[in-house]
Length: 259
Image: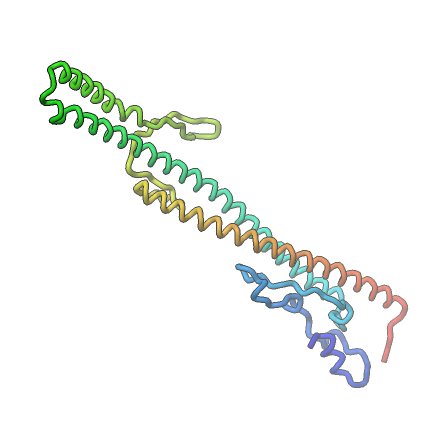
């Protein structure tokens, strides 16, 4: 039963009930609790007022409009909060994807260095094997010469595997850095916390964090779209209630009606 219906039902003589006797409206009267359309944040669905006159009843149209504007203000506050969260998540996703790309680069760097060194050892084993024991001295000399060259190449592998990069000291100021092959990496977790992880652990952690952040942002975008629909409905309600109040004021200028 709406406040207008309750007011009319409480007066059998047909005389108007004083507005002070009517229970004032609240923002809950402008919303519908719909679990299916509430979204992840349980945003209440705005009720579209089909008959403004019946909805307002004996209430003061100015008070009803003020309550509707209060709900609109709450919706807009939620919109700003979700929008900020979405922007923060988008920035974090970019940072985590860059970190993940760097970890993958370090893993590739390490794997390339191990592959080169293992390949050199395998060639040396073939040159120094028993298949050459009965060959001529010339062939042995050639094999020894190849082994020395491969040793020199393997000795240079650490230099070849080093990763040259630049890190930011300040805005528009970068310094050159050389990163040797490594088994671990330090990740900034926030709140002045840095932890060291192996490359595999770091890749797993960053991959999971990126996926979680993307899901959270997708939910925020979905709630934002739903919230904007509720804002539109509430804005229409506010405009119609305002127009109804103007109309009532114009009618009141013609003279008050008495029982």
